[in-house]
Length: 313
Image (tube, rainbow, N blue to C red):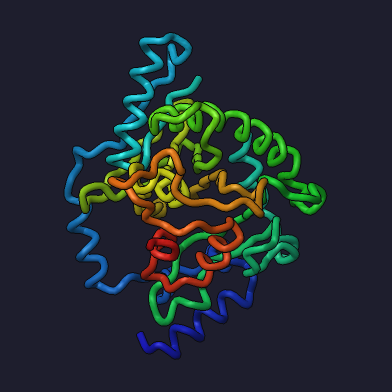
């Protein structure tokens, strides 16, 4: 596909502010060319999907309050964080609220449509659309709500109540895996304040492990934990941030709800490798930075760079 033709299609879709769902509602019968990956890219990824035996580790939190079981759980989380960068926690409304937003009339959703990454509440389709430079774009629409939104009334009414309740509960829930991750690094349980959690029962999430894409099979009452860039930096590469993607369903929609714990509560705080993990034998691998520096650079970086590349020494 010619670059200028591709860019014209991207711009036309972005200008509608209706996102991917707008294409479905318009009754398209073929996927637009800009969403189709080049054959050589697909061939490379098919080679990464050959293994059907890989499975992201599942950690059962039952008995976490018992000393012997607690140590076992910490060891399992340490191994998963060092080797995978992902794991599922087995635990005993938000999806419906998100779905209701996306199913609203496009004129209602346009009020929230924005490519400004600093907005606390925004709706977008392919935030990276203006730096794709001829590459295929992602088949997804996104509703973003900051966990520290300063004006709750800015959250769409159709999902405001469930969003605020979800943020409140998942923030409290995060204390459990964060405490266990801190212990896995040999630190006090309250040391870490960063992670990413994704909850749902629909498959499609794939995680890169040993150059193979492993399917994440959701478990009932489960929470998927992604170590992410910030925890890899804080652990000075002891934990790993794994590449991952979500594959669209062949039939019907897929809703993902993710919560990012990235230090926004302390925007002026400096982040970098944890001092207790640094020594002459293990010098710091990353420079210190503020969260605002990471966010700004992340949304302006080339697509072939990772967040880790931005601050690696």
